[in-house]
Length: 166
Image (cartoon, rainbow, N blue to C red):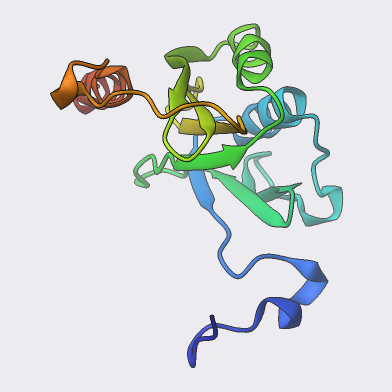
């Protein structure tokens, strides 16, 4: 699909994505280390831009073709954590790695429509990650209105409501 507004994918500089998320957190350097460790990716070192006080005004990591960018929250700035979706080889492995680095599991690996497995985590910076794993041949679960589990919605609902009170 083409757009009269968006740059064509093959025209994006440095083989990047058309849309790239940016989060504002406390301790952006720690966030970058967490993402690097959990997902096995390297920071784009040449993009790191520290300010004189050491806080980062810009840092980024490449996950697939997408650049995830982060900056430290400055005085008067609100936190702007993200809701991030990422495809991985094994949801359970990522959740384990993330828990070992301070994340909380929101949704355990759960069969999801479209032949995939979904898991969710809340990282120590309040970003919620949707972790997707291909699961070809997996049957679709029964929806909650047909007597199936409502874990996919209920776990997210609980997590988001808990963040609203912080």
